[in-house]
Image 1 (cartoon, rainbow, N blue to C red):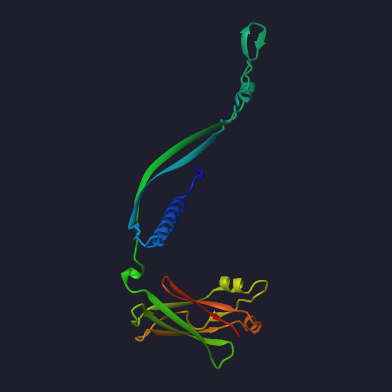
Image 2 (image 1 turned 90 degrees about the vertical axis):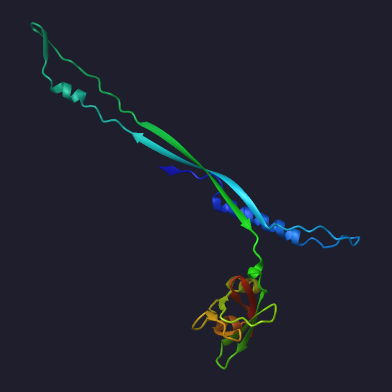
Length: 236
């Protein structure tokens, strides 16, 4: 049984809907609150979007059959001669059957309906937005830097027990250093995930690549809590 995929996958369809929905929401969000005469504009938002998709799956089964070879001729040669008239003997001859191949295709279709809803979610579940302050500092050990992080929210409250992730951003580093060859040997020591303390602070150590930093290249690091991200750079 074989399945031929000549249409969009369900993942592509859903991603296409979500991308279009984000574009529409961004356009509505960027509408000016007042027109050129100072009159209030009517503002809209998309709280949710319901959708129904009809998905058709087609399965094709192909069967090939070949008949058994006939042994009638060989069998006929082993049969005794049959006498029909006195003094005469007649052989009964058989014509062999020609082998033929039969191909059979069977197609089955399954149609299903998928319903769902895209719901707008307020960033950070409606709580004040998180703010990540990250600063790289040199240590007494060459090529080792401390990354000191403080996490607060838009109301100025310190956020404790927040999981902070540290990553070296190779793609951004390459874009900031075009037409050069980098080693990308920069890595974090011990751990790259740390929770903030009661004061909303955390710290990690990173060892930068000796050759990359000596050549004056800019190294980019990512510091994030969930989908809240900040970037920092290190350069000699």
